[in-house]
Length: 136
Image 1 (cartoon, rainbow, N blue to C red):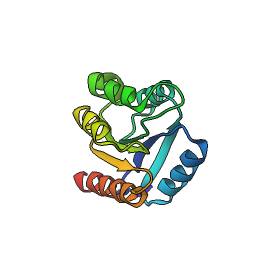
Image 2: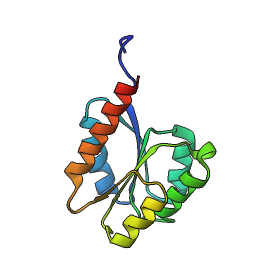
Image 3: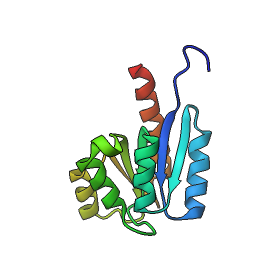
Image 4: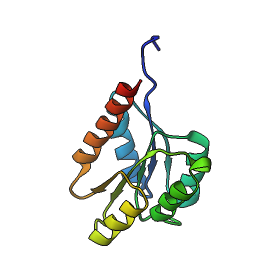
């Protein structure tokens, strides 16, 4: 790493589908200045990864193998000293208005529909990375 190089944007991907987790993880890793530090399939794994890895960004699916993305978001909001304060983006098949509102009240930065907004999610990740680089 050169003296002026910035550390990568560290992402925790919380996704219960092994196929989508692998696909999205690979797409994120292709972005310059981005590193996926962990992929978690359930709430307990996600909370452990948040505590251990301290990512800059958490991409959260709402439906998980065990627990829920809402539980992860609630923990982030109520225990930031334990889990950190990463930027948060929800990426889900359940993009109903009431879930969007619930996520907003839990402090989610952005909400993306898996069926329609993969490119928008990747653009958001790029914007977060650029904002982090400009902040240094």
